[in-house]
Length: 297
Image 1 (tube, rainbow, N blue to C red):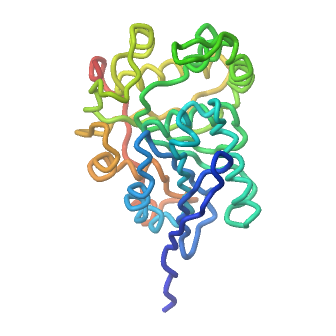
Image 2 (image 1 turned 30 degrees about the vertical axis):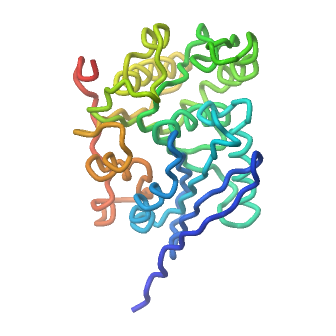
Image 3 (image 1 turned 45 degrees about the horizontal axis):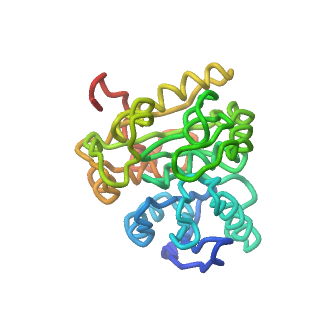
C-alpha cells in the first residue's frame, strides 16, 4: 500500500518592504485545485494560523500560502493600496512563487480573517483577474460599492479620513474599483462572521460617519456590506454569488471560529467534485444562511 507523503510546512523569507515573508503548506500529494492565500489579522498571528489550518491542508490536499505583512514595513496593509503598497508586495510574492514552480500561472483563491479580510476584498477588487474564490471572515470595516463615498470607504475619488490622507489621493483606486466592479462580483464570495462578534474593541474603526454607514460592530457591518454588494452586482449586470453565514457562538477570535464555527472549511474550501462521493460528504462546507433581521443589532 502506497503511503501519501506528509504535509510539508516551511518558511519562505521575504525582502523587507518589497515582498513579505510567507509560510507555505504543501501537501504530499496536492490536488489540482487552486492554491489558497490566507491573510492574517492585525495581530499578525501567522504561526497560529499555520497550526490551525494544517489539518485542513492535509484533508483537502490544497497548497496554502500565508504571507506575513510585518508591522515595520506594512503598518496599514489592510487597505491593500496603502502608502506601503501591500498590494504590490502580494503580487511580487505570487510572481516569485510562480517562478519557483510552487504555484501555477492562474489565479489563487484568497481568504482573510479580520484585517486580512479587509485586505482581501480590496485586493480582489483592484486585481480581479488574480483571484478566484474570495472568503472574507469578520473584517472590521469595508469598502462599499458606492461611488459617492471616498476611498477607502467607497469607490469614489476623494480621500480624507482623518488619518493623514490628502484630498484626491484615492483617485486612482476609485477609478480602478469602478472599472473593475462587474469583474469583482463575477466570482464566488463567501462572507462569515461570528454571532457574538458585536464588541466595539480597540481595533474596530469607530466614528459617527462610519457607524452610521456600516453599523456599530463587525456582525452588522458584514450583513450591510453583503446587502449592498448583492444590489451593486445586479446593477452591474452580474448575478451575485455571495454566501453570507454566521458562526454560532463565536466572537472575534480565529481559533474559536475554527474550532467552534468550523471556519477552516470556509477559509480553505474542499476541491470541487464531479459528483457525490464520500470525500465530498466529509469536506462539505458549513451550511450557511441569512440571519433574521435584528440578529446583529
